[in-house]
Image (cartoon, rainbow, N blue to C red; front, side, top):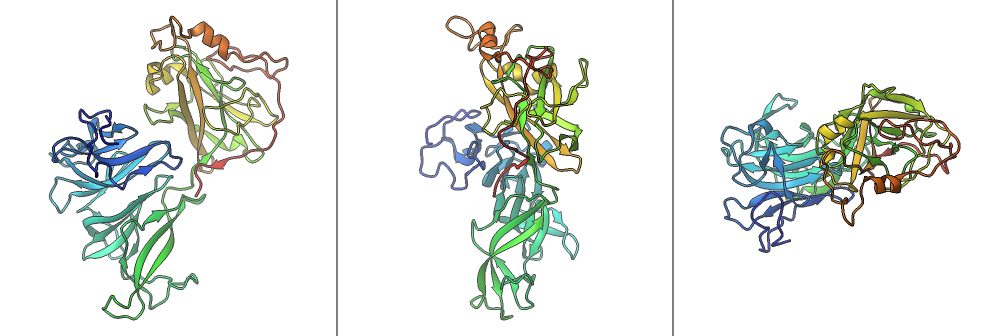
Length: 451
């Protein structure tokens, strides 16, 4: 709100009536946001993009009016950000926005996706008649939960086109299906994409297809007049070009414990079990593609440890799917169904994910991701609670009145159990014996996001 401070800017948000743009967006579950905003600064430098209470940065530079647009992100020499328009953000923090820069007006309009300009005014784009130049301002834009984006833009010689992930899927003067029978009529000609915020995308389906919703004027009478055109709302299903949709798999970091303690200063490994289900055969997972990342997108991916100590990939019954939200958890072990357990080197987690920056007691959500053997991408979420401080980690909870390593270790220790299988449940330490438990109900892979 007006007057609030944002990280990365010396000035607060302006207190005027138009300080937050109407085109702000939330992530699908409402945990993140992105908003074009105005700072309490000169009108030549006040425009800014705010993501989760901080100024968005690309290439180490703030995405702010009159600030440099890095060449590493597709900027031209000496080019600066100017205005920001349509925006979007996913739960994982993937960002999309449109706007313009201070470049020449024939090349200043742009689309930014994942920190890169992926399309800009003046670029050539393929059409059935050969490459054509993109021109003018973006008229509509949308970004869905799977990271697919669409825009309505003009190409020479003055035709509007609908673009999905950089590919034209529909052009003015094409025939459309106006009566909904599945066949385009010979006298139903698309003459104009209409509306301001009427473009929308559904979620990507299991085959990588995306439903695009838009409004348009249709010429049924073959006249040059627009007064006899019919406006309709349309649904076009197009190939996203991104392959199958990402599915969500059940994950249990350090199975048999809850919460999941992790000491970033450890020189051991962090085990993570992808739980098999009646619907998921874990042998269909391509182990070579597995890596772990922070859910907030900070840091670099960490691959499965190559050892020693090993083995670093195990097929064994160690976990039970948890039907709840991260960071909630349970301390159940096996359930009679084969699981895939992988291990990640604690030193790599510390260096690449920056886990040593967290204070004792903080909870960090992690994502194990990869693909199945058929190419279907997956994500699996769980969290760790930071413990221990033998090597100078922050001690927000340690010291007088706080909770030190010994107390946390005691607090997070799982109850003893009397049967096995055995396996490491700690940072390269022998685990407590566990008893296989029958699962209440079979659970399988889930789509990452609903429609």
